[in-house]
Amino acid sequence: MKVKALILGADRLGNIPNTLKEYGIKDYTHWTGRKKGMRNFQIPSETDMIIVFYDFIEHNISKIVKENAKQNNIPCVFSRRACSDLAKQLNNCRGCSVHKPQ
Image 1 (cartoon, one colour):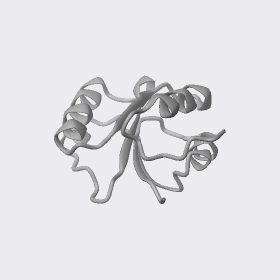
Image 2: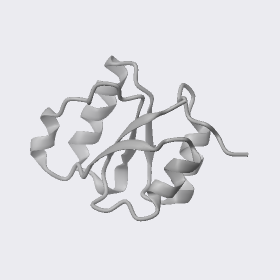
Image 3: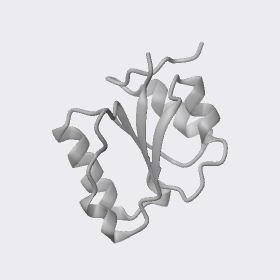
Image 4: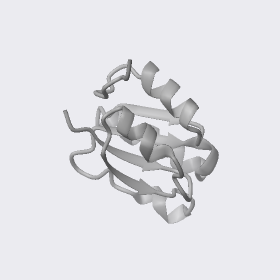
């Protein structure tokens, strides 16, 4: 199953794409989420899940993202920008359609 994610937060992803691949997430859109103008964003169609790096995002955007995800019934994962924390959050995500590595 191909999972498409919207990633919000962090200027650079570093090794995050490697962790995403381990969970079957090969297709993603990345927005830094640092500018106030992003408060009016629209979730791209065909988005299966949203990942928010809360330590690298404008505060009000994270609240808006959470509300939009809930309205659109899209799983939303909040994580620090660290591979270990992202893996932990993906493992704990109910409703996420990701492949969980053994």
